[in-house]
Image 1 (cartoon, rainbow, N blue to C red):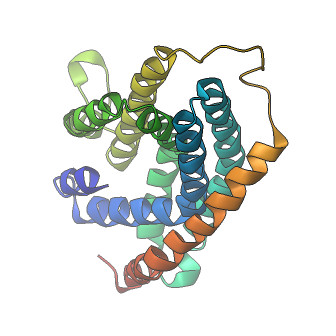
Image 2: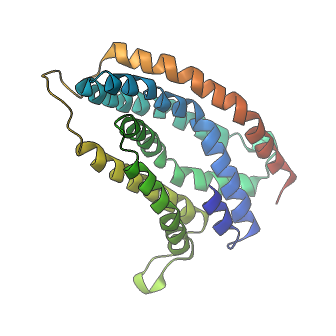
Image 3: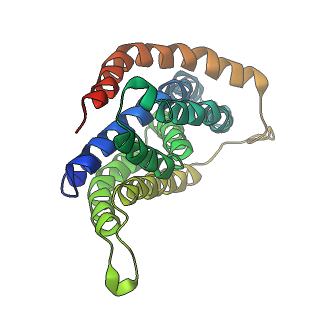
Length: 238
Protein backbone atom coordinates (compact mmCIF):
# COMPACT_ATOMS: atom_id res chain seq x y z
CA UNK A 1 0.00 0.00 0.00
CA UNK A 2 2.79 2.44 0.84
CA UNK A 3 4.67 1.83 -2.43
CA UNK A 4 1.41 2.12 -4.37
CA UNK A 5 0.53 5.43 -2.73
CA UNK A 6 3.99 6.91 -3.23
CA UNK A 7 4.01 6.12 -6.93
CA UNK A 8 0.36 7.04 -7.49
CA UNK A 9 1.24 10.58 -6.43
CA UNK A 10 3.31 10.89 -9.61
CA UNK A 11 0.18 10.30 -11.71
CA UNK A 12 -2.22 12.79 -10.15
CA UNK A 13 -3.80 13.87 -6.88
CA UNK A 14 -6.90 11.88 -7.83
CA UNK A 15 -4.83 8.73 -8.43
CA UNK A 16 -3.09 9.16 -5.08
CA UNK A 17 -6.37 9.64 -3.21
CA UNK A 18 -8.07 6.71 -4.99
CA UNK A 19 -5.12 4.38 -4.42
CA UNK A 20 -4.90 5.20 -0.75
CA UNK A 21 -8.67 4.89 -0.35
CA UNK A 22 -8.76 1.60 -2.23
CA UNK A 23 -5.86 0.14 -0.25
CA UNK A 24 -7.57 1.15 3.00
CA UNK A 25 -10.82 -0.52 1.99
CA UNK A 26 -8.93 -3.62 0.90
CA UNK A 27 -7.29 -3.86 4.31
CA UNK A 28 -10.53 -3.36 6.25
CA UNK A 29 -12.49 -5.83 4.12
CA UNK A 30 -9.84 -8.53 4.40
CA UNK A 31 -9.10 -8.20 8.12
CA UNK A 32 -11.37 -11.03 9.33
CA UNK A 33 -9.98 -13.35 6.66
CA UNK A 34 -6.46 -12.38 7.76
CA UNK A 35 -7.36 -13.53 11.25
CA UNK A 36 -8.43 -16.90 9.85
CA UNK A 37 -5.05 -17.22 8.10
CA UNK A 38 -3.26 -16.58 11.40
CA UNK A 39 -5.42 -19.26 13.05
CA UNK A 40 -3.09 -22.03 11.88
CA UNK A 41 0.00 -20.59 13.62
CA UNK A 42 -0.43 -22.36 16.99
CA UNK A 43 -1.65 -25.56 15.34
CA UNK A 44 1.33 -26.01 13.03
CA UNK A 45 3.75 -24.95 15.78
CA UNK A 46 2.24 -27.50 18.15
CA UNK A 47 2.41 -30.26 15.53
CA UNK A 48 6.04 -29.59 14.64
CA UNK A 49 6.97 -29.25 18.30
CA UNK A 50 5.50 -32.69 19.00
CA UNK A 51 7.34 -34.18 16.04
CA UNK A 52 4.12 -34.75 14.07
CA UNK A 53 5.37 -33.41 10.77
CA UNK A 54 2.61 -35.03 8.72
CA UNK A 55 -0.01 -33.52 11.01
CA UNK A 56 1.61 -30.12 10.46
CA UNK A 57 1.37 -30.58 6.69
CA UNK A 58 -2.27 -31.63 6.98
CA UNK A 59 -2.92 -28.51 9.06
CA UNK A 60 -1.32 -26.42 6.34
CA UNK A 61 -3.83 -27.76 3.83
CA UNK A 62 -6.69 -27.14 6.24
CA UNK A 63 -5.46 -23.56 6.41
CA UNK A 64 -5.58 -23.40 2.63
CA UNK A 65 -9.21 -24.56 2.61
CA UNK A 66 -10.08 -22.19 5.47
CA UNK A 67 -8.70 -19.06 3.81
CA UNK A 68 -10.14 -19.90 0.39
CA UNK A 69 -13.55 -20.10 2.02
CA UNK A 70 -12.91 -16.93 4.02
CA UNK A 71 -11.81 -15.03 0.90
CA UNK A 72 -15.38 -15.15 -0.46
CA UNK A 73 -17.01 -13.06 2.31
CA UNK A 74 -13.80 -11.04 2.47
CA UNK A 75 -14.14 -10.10 -1.19
CA UNK A 76 -17.81 -9.31 -0.63
CA UNK A 77 -16.88 -6.95 2.21
CA UNK A 78 -14.28 -5.21 0.06
CA UNK A 79 -16.73 -4.66 -2.78
CA UNK A 80 -19.51 -3.73 -0.38
CA UNK A 81 -17.40 -0.94 1.10
CA UNK A 82 -16.31 0.10 -2.39
CA UNK A 83 -19.85 0.52 -3.65
CA UNK A 84 -20.96 2.33 -0.49
CA UNK A 85 -18.44 5.15 -0.86
CA UNK A 86 -20.89 7.67 -2.28
CA UNK A 87 -23.25 6.94 0.61
CA UNK A 88 -20.35 7.76 2.95
CA UNK A 89 -19.98 11.16 1.33
CA UNK A 90 -17.09 10.39 -1.03
CA UNK A 91 -17.31 12.34 -4.29
CA UNK A 92 -18.38 10.31 -7.31
CA UNK A 93 -15.17 10.59 -9.34
CA UNK A 94 -12.97 9.56 -6.41
CA UNK A 95 -15.28 6.68 -5.54
CA UNK A 96 -15.31 5.39 -9.13
CA UNK A 97 -11.50 5.55 -9.38
CA UNK A 98 -11.12 3.77 -6.04
CA UNK A 99 -13.40 1.01 -7.31
CA UNK A 100 -11.19 0.60 -10.37
CA UNK A 101 -8.29 0.02 -8.00
CA UNK A 102 -10.30 -2.47 -5.94
CA UNK A 103 -11.42 -4.57 -8.91
CA UNK A 104 -7.83 -5.00 -10.10
CA UNK A 105 -6.52 -5.56 -6.57
CA UNK A 106 -9.21 -8.06 -5.53
CA UNK A 107 -7.62 -11.10 -7.25
CA UNK A 108 -4.70 -10.71 -4.83
CA UNK A 109 -6.89 -11.41 -1.79
CA UNK A 110 -6.75 -15.23 -1.88
CA UNK A 111 -3.06 -15.04 -2.75
CA UNK A 112 -2.36 -12.78 0.23
CA UNK A 113 -4.16 -15.18 2.56
CA UNK A 114 -2.40 -18.22 1.11
CA UNK A 115 0.93 -16.47 1.65
CA UNK A 116 0.10 -15.93 5.32
CA UNK A 117 -0.80 -19.61 5.73
CA UNK A 118 2.38 -20.84 4.04
CA UNK A 119 4.49 -18.38 6.02
CA UNK A 120 3.03 -19.70 9.28
CA UNK A 121 3.89 -23.25 8.27
CA UNK A 122 7.44 -22.32 7.27
CA UNK A 123 8.00 -20.42 10.51
CA UNK A 124 6.80 -23.42 12.51
CA UNK A 125 9.22 -25.58 10.51
CA UNK A 126 12.05 -23.14 11.41
CA UNK A 127 12.43 -22.09 7.78
CA UNK A 128 11.38 -18.42 7.71
CA UNK A 129 13.97 -17.35 5.13
CA UNK A 130 11.93 -17.99 1.93
CA UNK A 131 9.04 -15.83 3.16
CA UNK A 132 11.45 -13.10 4.26
CA UNK A 133 13.22 -13.11 0.89
CA UNK A 134 9.88 -13.00 -0.92
CA UNK A 135 8.82 -9.93 1.05
CA UNK A 136 12.16 -8.21 0.51
CA UNK A 137 11.97 -8.86 -3.24
CA UNK A 138 8.35 -7.73 -3.38
CA UNK A 139 9.06 -4.04 -2.72
CA UNK A 140 11.36 -3.36 -5.70
CA UNK A 141 9.27 -5.65 -7.91
CA UNK A 142 6.13 -3.77 -6.92
CA UNK A 143 7.78 -0.42 -7.64
CA UNK A 144 8.97 -1.64 -11.04
CA UNK A 145 5.59 -3.12 -11.88
CA UNK A 146 3.85 0.08 -10.83
CA UNK A 147 6.10 2.16 -13.05
CA UNK A 148 5.64 -0.05 -16.11
CA UNK A 149 1.91 -0.62 -15.77
CA UNK A 150 0.80 2.85 -14.68
CA UNK A 151 2.75 4.61 -17.44
CA UNK A 152 2.72 1.85 -20.07
CA UNK A 153 5.38 0.89 -22.60
CA UNK A 154 4.25 2.02 -26.03
CA UNK A 155 7.12 0.25 -27.76
CA UNK A 156 5.58 -3.07 -26.65
CA UNK A 157 1.98 -1.98 -27.12
CA UNK A 158 1.36 -1.78 -23.38
CA UNK A 159 -1.03 1.09 -22.61
CA UNK A 160 -0.84 3.32 -19.54
CA UNK A 161 -3.24 1.85 -16.98
CA UNK A 162 -2.90 4.46 -14.25
CA UNK A 163 -4.58 3.38 -11.00
CA UNK A 164 -5.57 0.04 -12.51
CA UNK A 165 -1.93 -0.65 -13.35
CA UNK A 166 -0.87 0.11 -9.78
CA UNK A 167 -3.40 -2.38 -8.43
CA UNK A 168 -2.46 -4.98 -11.04
CA UNK A 169 1.22 -4.71 -10.12
CA UNK A 170 0.39 -5.38 -6.47
CA UNK A 171 -1.72 -8.38 -7.45
CA UNK A 172 1.05 -9.88 -9.58
CA UNK A 173 3.63 -9.37 -6.84
CA UNK A 174 1.42 -11.08 -4.26
CA UNK A 175 1.15 -14.15 -6.46
CA UNK A 176 4.92 -14.06 -6.96
CA UNK A 177 5.30 -14.26 -3.19
CA UNK A 178 2.87 -17.19 -3.10
CA UNK A 179 4.97 -19.02 -5.70
CA UNK A 180 8.13 -18.51 -3.63
CA UNK A 181 6.68 -19.88 -0.39
CA UNK A 182 4.87 -22.71 -2.21
CA UNK A 183 8.19 -23.85 -3.66
CA UNK A 184 9.72 -23.72 -0.17
CA UNK A 185 6.84 -25.74 1.31
CA UNK A 186 7.22 -28.43 -1.35
CA UNK A 187 10.88 -28.82 -0.37
CA UNK A 188 9.87 -29.93 3.16
CA UNK A 189 9.24 -33.63 3.70
CA UNK A 190 5.59 -34.04 4.75
CA UNK A 191 6.54 -36.91 7.03
CA UNK A 192 5.65 -40.58 7.16
CA UNK A 193 2.15 -41.92 7.24
CA UNK A 194 -0.83 -42.67 5.07
CA UNK A 195 -3.26 -39.98 6.24
CA UNK A 196 -4.35 -37.90 3.24
CA UNK A 197 -2.72 -34.49 3.21
CA UNK A 198 -5.25 -32.42 1.29
CA UNK A 199 -8.66 -33.79 2.23
CA UNK A 200 -10.73 -31.39 4.37
CA UNK A 201 -10.86 -32.16 8.08
CA UNK A 202 -13.85 -30.44 9.58
CA UNK A 203 -12.56 -30.62 13.16
CA UNK A 204 -9.33 -28.89 12.17
CA UNK A 205 -11.19 -26.32 10.09
CA UNK A 206 -13.40 -25.52 13.09
CA UNK A 207 -10.31 -25.13 15.26
CA UNK A 208 -8.73 -22.73 12.74
CA UNK A 209 -11.88 -20.60 12.61
CA UNK A 210 -12.24 -20.72 16.41
CA UNK A 211 -8.72 -19.36 16.79
CA UNK A 212 -8.65 -17.05 13.79
CA UNK A 213 -11.99 -15.26 13.79
CA UNK A 214 -11.55 -13.66 17.25
CA UNK A 215 -8.09 -12.53 16.18
CA UNK A 216 -9.53 -11.07 13.01
CA UNK A 217 -12.19 -9.32 15.04
CA UNK A 218 -9.52 -7.83 17.28
CA UNK A 219 -7.54 -6.60 14.27
CA UNK A 220 -10.70 -5.09 12.83
CA UNK A 221 -11.55 -3.37 16.11
CA UNK A 222 -8.03 -1.99 16.49
CA UNK A 223 -7.43 -0.80 12.95
CA UNK A 224 -10.93 -0.49 11.57
CA UNK A 225 -11.88 2.74 13.36
CA UNK A 226 -8.80 4.54 12.06
CA UNK A 227 -9.31 3.17 8.57
CA UNK A 228 -12.97 4.15 8.65
CA UNK A 229 -11.97 7.68 9.61
CA UNK A 230 -9.71 7.79 6.59
CA UNK A 231 -12.51 6.58 4.31
CA UNK A 232 -14.85 9.24 5.64
CA UNK A 233 -12.19 11.87 4.96
CA UNK A 234 -12.73 11.05 1.30
CA UNK A 235 -15.86 13.13 1.56
CA UNK A 236 -13.70 16.21 1.94
CA UNK A 237 -12.41 15.67 -1.61
CA UNK A 238 -8.98 15.67 -3.23
